[in-house]
Image (tube, rainbow, N blue to C red; front, side, top):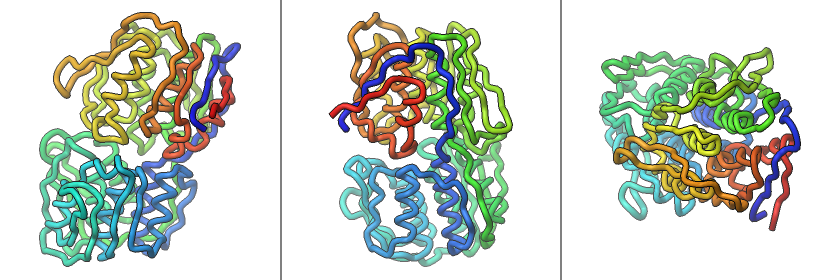
Amino acid sequence: MNAVRLTPPAGPIRATIPLASSKSESNRALIINALTGFRGTLHNVSAARDSQTMIRLLKSEDPVADVLDAGTTMRFLTAYFAVTGQHKTLTGTPRMCERPIGILVDALRTLGADIQYLKNEGFPPLKTNGFTASGTNRLAIRGDVSSQYISALLMIAPTLPDGLTLELTGEVGSRPYIEMTLRQMEHFGVTSVADWTAKTITVPPTPYTATDYAVESDWSGASYWFSMVALAEDESSEIELLGLKENSLQGDSAIVQIMRPLGIESTFTDQGVKLTKIPAQSSLAWDFTDCPDLAQTVAVCCAVKNIPLTLTGIESLKIKETDRVLALQTELKKVGAELVEVEKNTRYEVRQLAEITEIPTFATYDDHRMAMAFAPIAMRREVVIEEPGVVAKSYPSFWDDMAKVTGIQFVG
């Protein structure tokens, strides 16, 4: 299918959505369980392509590990294959091979990993050629590039002869994702000491304990439903999202606080969370440092609701599946809005330009979050989303769930 055409609902939207499982939790649990010798039992593992790719590659004896477009899978498996002494070639899509990995590789080499780049220095494809512990148990690593590098190192840290202390330099981005990693490690028997003032995390050498682990539903996937209710025209619209916890490990649960000023009241139930409409505020400013994956959703929602938005902490969006900042700047113009860089690489604003009357067709740039962030616009007007299959990366049932609240037709 080349595109999906979405049409607005005839009345209020009301549905109960059994959300997909968290890809972020699943991928961490899969690596940690692999480090127990696959002796634990994981429940509710994500059906997302990234997580299924992780499962396949962890079990595969093939010397080539093709992660496709899965950045988390590339980073976590690089650390896992390196520290377990496996000889593997890791590669992926052309875009995946443009995403930097040098910071992680340098750290792993310092710890004793033999890793070589097969094409461009600092980028996949790469090959792991074994591991001999160097005796180093302390590393400095930038905290402002990708928390996935940090999480990858933390998860393999207990297997090192002397454990590991990480010193995080610069600003620490996506801290909730790092805390998620530490809490999942704790579930498998590994305690750590995180001093966020000194910006150090110490993990002692401790064998992981095989155990059961149940993955929560995905707060990142939930964010699109928050946007749909916020954009719904009928004030009686409401959605119940199943499987979410109020005290979540996931940093993207911040969507509850972000969306309240945009007109969404969240009420937790025994089954999840119910979303209802309340009056919205006239503007919003938010630092997305700890939850960058929510930025697209919120930017689109504000653009359509004509609520001025100031965004900070979105620097990491430029090295995701696509340059998400550039993609947003291009696609928001199709709804008469713009994303303006106010301070270079640090502060952006969403502003209105003009009313657009024609049916917009949105490109997705091989990026699942572009497709799902722009889909809620269908609560107000007909839209076309190109290459809708990209949602398989994190939320394979997204279009089936969308069909519960809006008209939907696949084209091509």
